[in-house]
Length: 403
Image 1: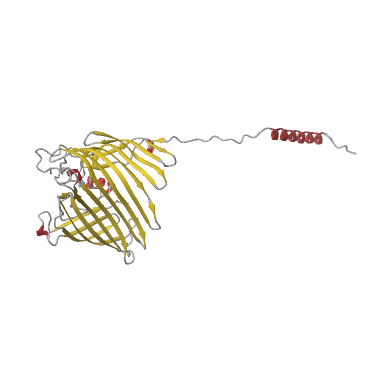
Image 2 (image 1 turned 120 degrees about the horizontal axis):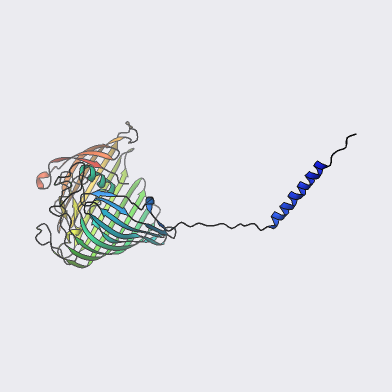
């Protein structure tokens, strides 16, 4: 008869008791449920080193912004302390700019610093103008230099299909000319670097001095029934001006004592048949008051993007009117990889600019072909003999990188 060993049974019982005791001891120890919360610094360097989107033009050359960003309060405070290096001018332009959001529907935007300014951003987007200036030497903007400080308070009013953004603001600036008549040097470009209508095109001189003004206006966006539109209105009333004339520069217009200027820019896109669309675009500047607005408030048009039969920005003044209709017909039977369908466009444009009045409008009628962001237009002026600024016909190449 075999006797059963009690050793394994004893060992198993001892292990069970030990585990039970250990479990009781563990339960007796308080569990630490706390955790450490890590907060990111409100100051950051975009792209890791503080660089921002660069730009390129015929006055500044390469503009390279750098600086830290301050973000606080879940987007309530967004401030950039920047310095912009201008390669052609050799300048380092500092600025402090940003947005404060005291409420969900209100914000305060501000800017203070030195820079190169223009009134012609409406013709091309920053990206389009930079690329065309670098490769083709064609810059669709006039420039002046200045130190400027402004602030705006904007209230957003939302509707079911509309957004209204009225604002009030103030502006203080001191301006001077740059690259007028005979630029000392011009930035490099692939084509057109030495052309008088390209990278060496001079800037109209401005009246040196200071302007203090009040600002009011509103933005308006809507989308209904497939129709989308955006309008921006700004009215500026000068409060104090201290401006000098341009001395011996015969192209300078003596400024008036005060002025009130309104600028309206709008764009509406209307779907028609199938994928076809009609885009209507308008830009107008009107000025009131004794004398003329200073030259740093002049607006310009002419060339690719506005009136193709007119030299680039050959028309200018404190009064401007430009309207354009562009009917685009995609050729849907042709589908190209990545870039999509080519298109045919029918285009009508009319406009002019002058001092103290809007002269008789110059008209362009044309047809264009293109694909994606690139298009070529052939335009004619049916009444070109009415203006010394306009030719009978012109071929223009356009690049649209606006988003």
